[in-house]
Image (cartoon, rainbow, N blue to C red):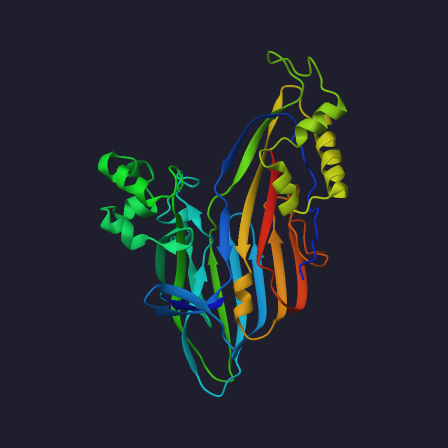
Length: 355
């Protein structure tokens, strides 16, 4: 969370998983929009829209952040340490969306975030508001686009309709280069009172936007005959890492040499028990990005911070970069705990699944 005005990262890789039946021969890879989320922040309304601002009086005593591919839950304990009540706006900014990269998603409500977003204060539901902008190189061009005759649907969602007639020629004058579309900025916000000297509990949850990719894989087949020409171990392991953007995935998920070998071992073991009637498998991943840095806008570090990662199935694999060592709570739940936590800028969590 963060205040808003309107107008030591130690990398740690986690090998949670452990059945990797599928990543072996990539036939096709499709990349989809990333799941995105953010920490809250205090805010205020100004001439230019919502802007995040820092609070020197309100402290986060505790934050519990739970992330899964299909749901995010956050619970905060706040304390207003000033000598008077504070009335402010609290905002939840989302990472930027791009109209072209995410043209197969409803940018009006990416992934159903807004329709699923719920907030409560001390157990009482809160009425939410939202703000959206079109940004080009971090400049707000929303008004310019409206003056050109674009509807909100064309600005915030319908990419195809932008490439028509006179409108397209006008857009080319505005855009630095053809094909470079503007980004979409979304912020959810609400009005809130922080009573002096009193702890309050704020909770919110939502479904993150759909993101990730998948890989159709085979295992040395030809003309539908299983293992007619089986691949060598080296060939299979080489194919294992041919995802589009593999190097970036390894970097973002902190997949080091030890983890890489563990994944390859599990993948090879899973292939060994592949039913004879099957010549391929599906490997997929969800990428969930969560903005943590706005948590630095509150007073001091976060007293107690818990990061809870929830897999759908025990055999799924989760990897990310985060300080410390996780504790296994159950076959599908792992937790990191930190005291006096200073949040890093963001979390990028990969959930790998194999069917």
